[in-house]
Length: 356
Ligand code: NAP
Ligand code: ZN
Image (cartoon, rainbow, N blue to C red):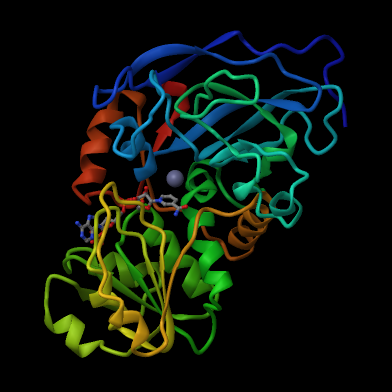
């Protein structure tokens, strides 16, 4: 492996799309990138997925946002320079960056591969402060500098544009599906057929589970079945909740808005689990009798650690899985945000970074 011997420095400012303030449309700007350190790689970003979390944060729906904000934590690109101490990557490698770009590597959670829960705090890819105290800026940009420890290898079998969404949507579904035993003989329901949900259908089917989509309406039914679901039901039809009562071993909810969790818990078998990954801006209330009856589990799950993210990418390559994407130019980001909010995404918007 070779790396440039001359001092490697990133462009000090790079083009990006940012929300200048909460709720303002995103617009073209430039942001600083740090010089390439000894253990850093410089990545030329090729594609960046639009996650609903980007929208929650750019609209400051979760609060305490840092503005101007450059969202984007589904990054796929090519290594264009490496620091002198980099051993895992070389110029030209196909790489990805997900939801966090730093963690201590030493605490119990990091050592166990749960580095998203670093005890000293994992540094978000954007809308966070790095250990240098400077804000981090995400993937709606042309370049990013990231420690090699937080850079993922994208296997040759997956095209970079359909790989980008795996860095958040892919791992966010892969992790709970693995943990809760999705596989042959298991009936798994995915609630919400958006960016996360459609990857959930693909991955759960590839793991061998019998997959059902629970979507607000039947308008995405043909797609859901094509993606690997065996069944598809509309949740705006009250009959769905009586017909499917007691059916599922595992339900994963990807819904971005508050949901009547009690109604979905009623669809679980005895000792079934409902795992929530959706992150709505408002709290939900729950009658706890809906978990007591049937010894049910209500759980959460947040993305996945770096080792499991690499495992997920390798799994997706081995099974020929990538996201279903709509490739857009950077000038379409604001329009795309509106369509995601209207549940009109099929099934992930991906920004062509060459248009930034
Ligand atoms: P998305 O593409 O917008 O998909 C969400 C889907 O939820 C929609 O397509 C829609 O599916 C359904 N939905 C939306 N509003 C609904 C409502 N009022 N009632 C019922 N269903 C509704 O969003 P995403 O990018 O997949 O993200 C989903 C959520 O997960 C967001 O809140 C995001 O912040 C969060 N997230 C969490 C993690 C984590 O680590 N836990 C990681 C990434 C994202 P149908 O049209 O099929 O009904
Ligand atoms: Zn995300």
